[in-house]
Image (tube, rainbow, N blue to C red; front, side, top):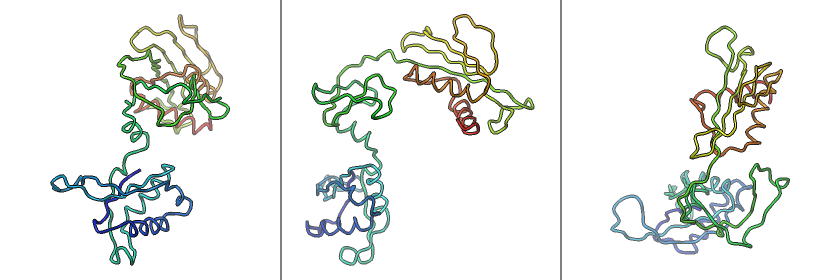
Length: 263
């Protein structure tokens, strides 16, 4: 939901009329996404008001797509002969808060904190119904999720990886060139709090000598190398992916080569 500041002179009949006209201005496929609305008194963020309360309309939505559709309409000047003949620019509040962040605020849960769901307030589902790589999958109402005051950190699985590339002319590798292939992807896995790696893995193009303590996989095409690494990450299911400059280079290179090779 988000809030729309309205004139103090508006009464229920005018607000109802406003909602009706607002729906007409929203694309038809999103009109029914407005679940409900109510009138509330809140403090203004802007200007000095001496802590006075002002009227707002709170718009509540079924979907985030509908939320955005109504927001787009209200961010433009609103014209209507009954409400504002010369046009009116409404001021919106909290329309930049996404649903997940709103949920965390309302339920007072931390983004990486512990939560609890009471027994009989959830049900498990199979991954055939909804694709997932989680160990346990449940569905519950958002109102059934509660925070837990526990600061302990689980032994998250951390995967650190690095790629090696070739260059056709000896210059810095360019992912758009056929010759500049990904020839190796090395990945180590450890649990948070324990610096020792519990698993080391290397994927290589063509052949590679055995490496002590490392599982080595060899493939005859670059496409198979990229797919093998995807399957490794799916199988090991790490909580954190890290590495040196992976956001500046490795991720982009892997994505570009995958698109180029159609994998």
